[in-house]
Image 1: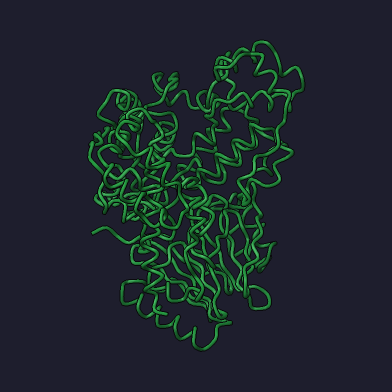
Image 2: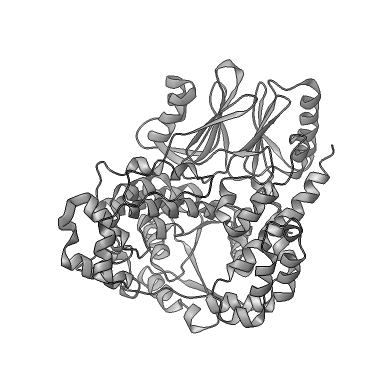
Length: 575
C-alpha cells in the first residue's frame, strides 16, 4: 500500500486564541488522527504538535514554549536551548538560529503578546504552510485530510494560480493553490496572530560581495562536513549514482567519511544516449562499491500514477518519473535507509553555460577581465562569438522578475552581476527537489548540496571562479578540480550528459490517450486556465516524435490531478 504523503508529516495546532467552537473542532480532529496512528510530538499549554505515523523527524522542546521539528546542527558550541535562553524569541532568536547553525527544521514558539512565531530553515528541507481561522493557528508541512475541516470557511482552489503552476511548476514550492493558506519561505520568520507577518531573514544575495574562499580544499571540506553529518544521523544510506558529476561527488564524500558504506543504484534508459552505466561503474569501481543497475521500462503512464501525485498539499512534480520513483522507494523501504542525492549540484557548482560569467568577472577585476584568452574560452564553452561574449561582459542587466509575485530570494538583486543572479534563480527552482514523492514517503531523502553551508559557500564565490578550469572555462570547473582525487577521469573530463529525451518522448506517445483526456477534457481546461488548443496541437504522435519538451504535457497533467483531488477534499471537509 502506498503511504499518504501526510503520514510522514507534522501538524502544529495553536488553540490559545481560538473560540470555543473551533477549539472543540480541533480537538475532534486530533482524536481522529490519534486513532489513525498519529502521535503527540509535544504539548505545551495550548501548543500541540502531532507527528504522522511514518514521520522520521523528531519533535523536541528546546525552550519554555519552543518546539523544534527536525534537526539543528551548531556551527560552533551553541545549542538551541542556549540560544533560546539568550534571546527567548522574536527576530533576534531567528537570526541567531540561522547564523549559528544549520539543518532541516522548523522552530515554533509562543511569542510576546501571545502570538505564534516560527522560523523555517534556509535550505527549505522542511516545508511550512499555515493558516488562521477563528483564532486557531495551524502550521504543517503535509496536513492530513482530517485537518481540512480546520481550514478557513472561504478556502477554495485558486484556479488562475493552478494555470500558472502548470507552466511554471516552481511556483508550487512557494504558493499554495488553496486560498487562505500561506507559505513561510526558506529562511523566513513568521509572526502569526490573526494573520501572518512573514519576514525573509536569509537571502542568497547576502552571501555575495564579501570575503570568499575559492580554494579547492575549502569546497571539499564544506561538502564533506555536510555529507558526513547527514550520513551519521541516518546510518543506512542509499544513493543514486547517475554517472554524472554531482552524484559522484556526493558518493565520494560518503565513502571518505568511512562511517557508512552507501548502497549505490544506477537507473538507465533502454537506448544508448540514456545509458550512463559506463560512467557510474567507473565511479563505483573507484570506491570499491557494488553498483545495482535498473533499466527504466518503456510503458504508458497510468491514471493511478498521476492520481498519487495529487494527494499532498502541493503537486508532487518530483514523482513524475513513476518507475524510478516507485523503484527507489521500494529499495529504501526494504533497506530501511535514507536516500542521498547529488541534486542541486548544477546550481551550487554552476553548470549553466552562459556568457554572463564574463560580466561577473568584469565586476570582480575590471576591464582586464576581458582578456582574449578568457573571451575565447567562454565563446567556445557557450558556442558564441568572442565579440558577443565581450559585449555581454560590459553589461549588467536588471534582475528578472518572476511575474508579479517574485520569490523572496529574487528581490533586491540589483547589486549582483547577472551570472550570480542566474545562480540564485537556479537555487529557487531547486527547491522542488525537497517536495513530495514516493521516495519521500518511504523515508528521508537528503540533498546535501542544497544545505545551508554548501549553498552559502558557493554563493560567495564569483561565477567566473566557479567555472575557471585548467586553461579553460567550463561548467562546475572548481568542483571538478576540488574532487578530482575522488572522480574517475571518465566523469571528471566528461563534457556531455545523458539524454533521456527519447525515453520520455516514447512514454508520452504511448500515454497520449490519457494525457489528452486529462488536459483537453479536465478541470483546468474547463476553467480556462490552460491553453487547451495549444495542447491539442502538441499532443499528437507526429509532434511528439521531434518535440523534446516532454514536460509540457506531463507537468500540467500533474496539476490537473492535484486539482481534481483537492476539489474532492475541500468538498468533503465537513462544513
